[in-house]
Length: 377
Image (cartoon, rainbow, N blue to C red; front, side, top):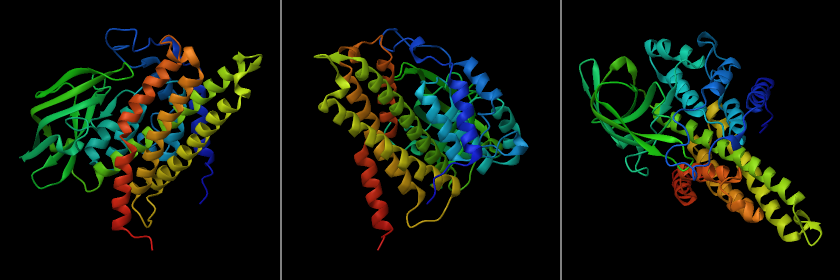
């Protein structure tokens, strides 16, 4: 199949490179050097520039001021954002808005989408379970009462929760269905506890105690949560790819200048082989990412569901980003352990992404279950 990017997708990536060109990752404090979060808020100035470049409305239709593009375009932009560790809820807002557009009611779409595309409304998603390993949809229960849904439960590690206007929460019903509730951050029955991520950014522990959400703000449609979860996961793989590419470039620059015994260490076979192995990891991460993004964007039928391609992308991303940063730390020598050197922040973000994606063994098991249920022969 042809993975050549369209002119519109390439234009989105080019616009993203222009916006992120002025972002300096080394100006943000290292998470090891501050007692709490590295900042109280995300980068609002960068958020405004993204909105002005129409990069927050990529997945929205023209009637909401969007470009009508797809998951591939979003992943191209996310890849660029990760190269500079952009501190913005780009993935969460874009994915949540896309889910509202695809599955939400007209009243909800009208209330949220145009403002989200202009950067005026910030969305995030509570995608982790009660412990961080349980299925997210089981962490919160929902029961219908008249024209409202009543939510109870807790979600941990919600990104940008303290700064978002709305949190999209998957909830489990008594009828064994999963729905998506669009919950205002400031609302009766909604509480937030502070958590700090590996990256040093603020996370939120969302606590729901008989929180009443109007039925118009709840998405009760088959496949909505599965589609949103796969889009979030594929976007996370794009972040891992962009970060890994930048780390390998940093390693190449350093080993090309660092001399030992009168020669650049990059000319030593042991160094070159390790760098080549990591390059192969990145190319595998890239190929599996575009396969997963294409399946989500096209919703094309196949022998396996799209979740199979997403699982393969997760296997390579979670393992690959870890190997890339570990090799970078090793080849940087003492600089790799310096918490004031930018590589330290990239390592912290890589670990956070690895934990978000989960262990490769779990995804391999899920892929095995899919292959058993959908034999290829």
